[in-house]
Length: 78
Image (cartoon, rainbow, N blue to C red; front, side, top):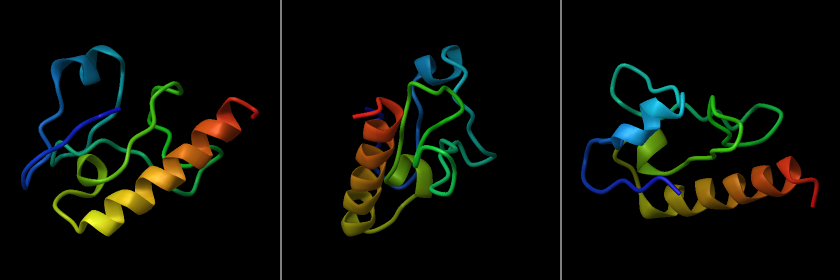
C-alpha cells in the first residue's frame, strides 16, 4: 500500500529502493491499461489514487483501489 496525503505525492524513500518508477511530478507510474491493472514498475507493487493521479477526488481513489485489487488478483492468479 502506498499512502498519499495532501495535494502533491511525496513518495517515501523505499519507493526508489524498490525500483518503483515515478514521473517528473513524483507520481508513481501505474497504468490502468497493462497486463495487470495498476501495477508499478516493481511487479509486486500496485498503486492508485493521489499517488498516481496527483490531487483528485476520493471517488477516483476508490476506483483506482478497486482496479488495483483486480490487478492483484489477476497477478496472483486467484
